[in-house]
Length: 326
Image (cartoon, rainbow, N blue to C red; front, top):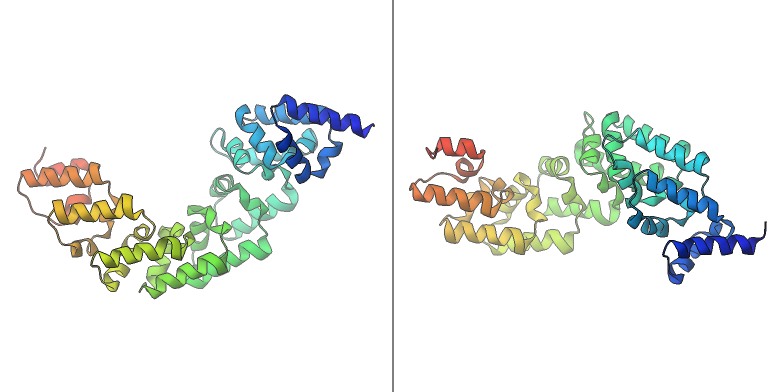
């Protein structure tokens, strides 16, 4: 086969699909196999990706990220891989969404990568139904090394005291993205920061189990500024530790859009002391307009005094019945 004709064919294919020269050159740099790729195969694979639910407007982005897809055998590789992924999905378009997020998913071997990955997670006690959800939510998992990456994450979580009754598996299901972070550069420094601000070991375990995303955030960019802001509001270090244990996202919520408006409303409009929220850290969970303002105004009209817990920790029907507002 004449190589120059083959290359001209694939170039024509790319231009026909709207790629500019810069994008085409970048794809050739990424994937040497494109030099011998046939436009017929590329067209077949493109049509197949469209048929499995990937929107045509997103296909150029998918191919730019992983041009190798166009060189893979349709019936030898792409179809079996997609069919295997379909067995993991429970919702329509779940597999198409996973491929769109991480197109390299299709270039990995089912036998060499996906099957060992599933076995690794099953050994952690993760139910089969949750396995698929987790992998399709964070398809990059298939690219991680079990030996050097995932095992290290599991050992780190075990070191926090979570190695019991399938707890580690539950943490990973809750936030599959935690496995993308470096233990030494992100997870361990965050855990050490939480200990330094006064969290007990059981408090740290509670954070990991209920809000593992807190462990994934940068100490200096997010956690420390939030801690400093809470100090500036007048909370003592012990109170902040209580707040973080009770409602861990307080350390990752936006100061300007979340913490500041709620504390301002608590003090200026509700006339309460900030100390009250240490008895009810979930105060920061509720919507300012929908829950805090509406309920405060309803109680103010009735001249009713009550704790934040009584005011907020119930649905609207129970709230109305509790305070005779029906």
